[in-house]
Length: 271
Length: 292
Image (tube, rainbow over all chains, first blue to last red; front, side):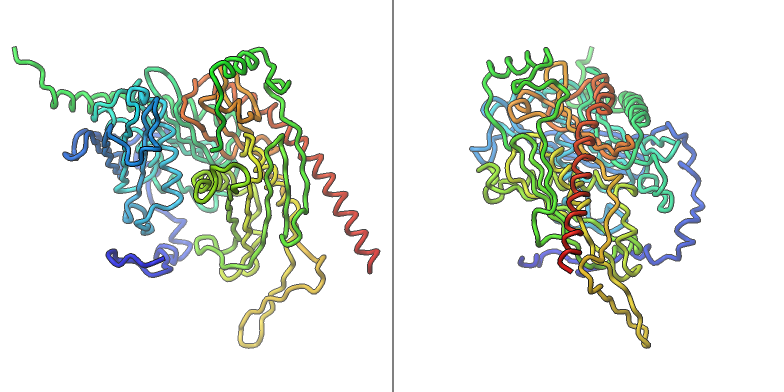
């Protein structure tokens, strides 16, 4: 593979300096649990539409330190004719984590983890978009994670659905994402990165895992469900219910942001 | 994914059949197709298995190699998955056509094994921080007729059961240099504990009901399916909604309930094949005595 000379490349193999901390420093974290919020509380959400002027629709979302930018292009003619669906349009989702977004520097080239997130994002958005209204067209959704502080997929789904709404793409409903981390008996809603990774030594205990759910709130349909780790069946059902509740908590913020963007684009007539 | 064209009339026929708990091939909604598991099929691997589920054929080969443990987990070995969609299965997979599906399948496998109990990775450690066993699990799709995930997980479990890792000894010389010695006896090997390795059950929603082990035709009628991987203890290690449709929350709860009965089938077949492999190994050991 020829090297890409335009980009500054890190050494072939490098390790994060945090790995070389003495083990005592890793475990004895003086951090306050959940930074003053309850287990069931989501982080305060900041959401705005229409920041990228070139795009048909765009949105920016902040939840704690997780920062996500999304832009939507289209509907437009697909580059490759043979890939165009005659009856319905195509929704192309691309999620990227900025190289500096995580603790460890990432590559510019999309890795398999990002591809997996893109697929999950596409599967979660698909049920909400009226693709039959856009035959022979493609809609591109580009999500860039600027800072990863946990629950990336959940917030990316919310952010992308806001951008789709801002672009004026016909949808059945907005899609809201929410994540949950199960740590033994505690279910932490909207986990940050440290909570998402969990304590290393505690990893051998049972009933630990993460759940990400996307919901169409008005139709009450689950458009995406992703869980990993190790969960009991009853914990899983409880986690799904908790995620649905926290999705509904996000709804007013998202609704307000979309409404604001609509009002700016089409100001109400003056009396 | 390999797909088949199904006409509207065929779809209606399949959906009405599912409503009445009678599928096109005569199965009920919660019945699996006939499953055959064969272990130790490829001699050059450390463990291998072939599973055929109806017309879906999956071959898994496991190779163990000595590698360097990941710096974050110095006292554990690790597992690598690779799924190859061969063009034998469908012409769509020719060239790079199967790559997307292959990446999706292997990413799902990483999620399924992303916990501490499925495999005891600590047993793969040779010398903490320096050497460990790396298990390369290669999955080859030979034929696809739906339900790849379930067939693949059963094949992986059987291949892991079949895996024999040679025992090694670490000796230290005067200067502190470490040397790895392989045992002379080819039968002196370590086996993996597979009791907690999960099996995947995929439930496809067709009309108002859901079916297990959907064929390609049935898959064409379903807009969304739920993949659940579960261990024999009933612990869920991975859940994924597949497909472009959405699911009603109630049907998700219903599906997770059904799963308890749904898994019995592969798990039962599984234990049965395990006893078969037990006898098989027993016999081969006898043969080795015979030759000595």
